[in-house]
Image (cartoon, rainbow, N blue to C red):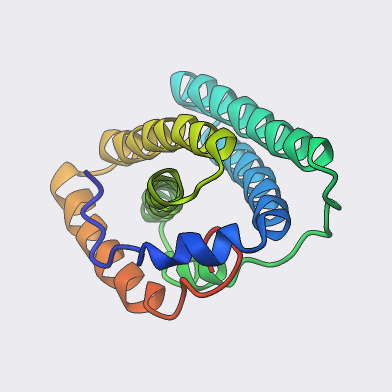
Length: 192
C-alpha cells in the first residue's frame, strides 16, 4: 500500500519487546508530536474548512492515542520518560522543500504521510512478532488508524497540488526515506 522501499527487519520487534517500557514512552511522545503536527497543518490551511475539520479529528485521535499509551505505561508500572528527539523524523524534515507556499503545503502533507506510513509498517511488525497479546491487539488497532491517516494526508496533497507532480514527489519521498531508514531499526524506539 505504501510502497516503502525498505521494510523493517522483523528482528526489530525483538529489540522493542526487550524493553517495552522504553518503546511505550517513545511511542507516547510520537503520538504527542503527531498531534502537534496536525495542529501545525491546521495553522497552514485555514482557508480549507473541510481539511481543517479532518485535521482536527486527526489531532484528537492522535491525542487519544497518546492518552492510551500513557495509560498502558501507568497500568504496567513503567516510568513515563522525558520527551526525546526523533532522529528519523528530523532527517525526514530536511527533505521538505522550502519556497512557494503551495509546494511547502504539499510537502508538509507528504512528510506527514511518510511518518504515518512508516509508523503503520512498524506497528504491523510489532503485531506480527511480539508475544504480548494485549500489545498485539493494541498495535493492530493503531496500525489501521495510521493507515487511515496516511491515506488522508496523501489525499489532501493530491487535492491541493497537481496530482502528477504530487505522485512524482511521493516517489522522491519514498527514495529519500529508503536512504535514511537503513540506519534505523536497532533501538527501542518506534522509528529507531
